[in-house]
Amino acid sequence: MRVHLSAEFIWHLFLYNAVGRHLPASTYPGGRLWRAIRYWMCRPLFADCGNDVNVEHGASIGFDRSVSIGSGSGIGINARIGEGTRIGSNVMMGPEVLVFTRNHSTSRTDIPMIEQGFEPVLPVIIGDDVWIGARAIILPGINIGSGCVLGAGTVVSRDVPARAIIVGNPGRVVRYRDSLPGLVQGAQH
Image (cartoon, rainbow, N blue to C red; front, side, top):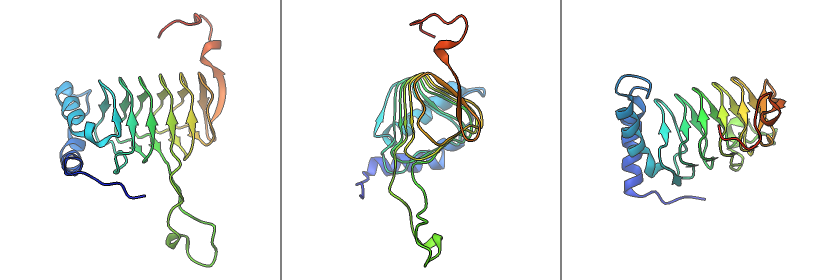
């Protein structure tokens, strides 16, 4: 399916890739300014974009206006977000996170895999209040429940239930946030 890209979209895509991606991270001096400029450049690139969104230095998002992101969320330094990804509100993302939404076709053996093209897009859905650690990898079609923590370097190859803490390769649930000592049920964090 081919999406019509407006002149405004193409202009903002050019600006972001030529200038915005190369601005310093929001933790550097002048960070609020760099963050505001990237937000202005990126907002039209999303299918839906909440308020107070932070797209960090070097981040790459789908190029067809199919990625959505909720208010208060951030895309980490040098992160790569595949087309069709839906990011909830208040999602924290570490550097170099990879969210894949499609794979190469490999089913035929009569032609090289490089000539087989791609499988259809399988969107990734990330719930609200999720923390994704540095260099985590999320594979196509995965649903991550609200309130999850994905440890640094985790490879997520299957759906993650709400409030799960998941680590490793392949990612496995090690506990749930609501079972941590001292946590008050229903408290806001």
